[in-house]
Length: 261
Image (cartoon, rainbow, N blue to C red; front, side):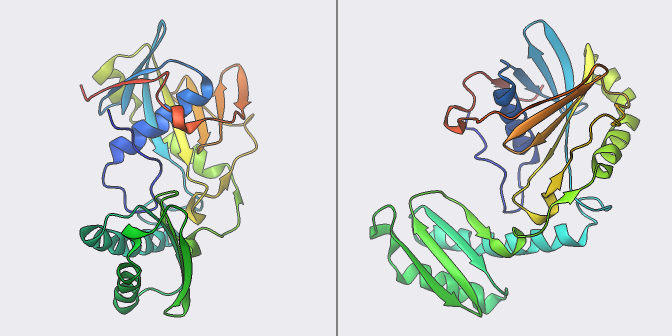
């Protein structure tokens, strides 16, 4: 299968693909040969050697509100959608793979100006590594050809980290309420939760450092993925963190996924 390229800063149009990608990243860090089957309740079932378990996946955000209710997250989504619309318009007219970052105000006129700048540079003809910066609409546009295909709204990526366990515990409690449904639907040997955050965005700059007091709820094991750097595993015996440098170019070498069941 084609692997999801990573946590997107644009609006997520395939939540299941993102969740699968996160599970694959975590299995890679753990060094475990997971065979992952898509489901709905829970999100996945996993075979890991002789282990068979259900895996629920949830994303963690800073603050008290949910993904849809948090003002910071809504603003990020709007800015990402704005930049993503420029990317889509550009790709209709040109094929160059670009790294694009922008910091500044947003409007339709600024979007139109950025698009015209990109098209006027004839980037399809430029070699990999070609780059330029340009002031646009009171902000700054940075473009590089052929290195990493990201379009980033930098204003949403420079906030302070939040040291707070509350979002994790709320997620465990919320998912535990549905645990009975998960057991009935898939009958796994046990049920586990993967909670991840995207530290590149302000809404995901969550640093969890206290694990001793985390309550497992209805889950036998909690995985906390600080994407894509490290995994902390919590169970009834305690917790461990694996800070491993992961070669993402080999993602999937030890992980097999099976389309939805």
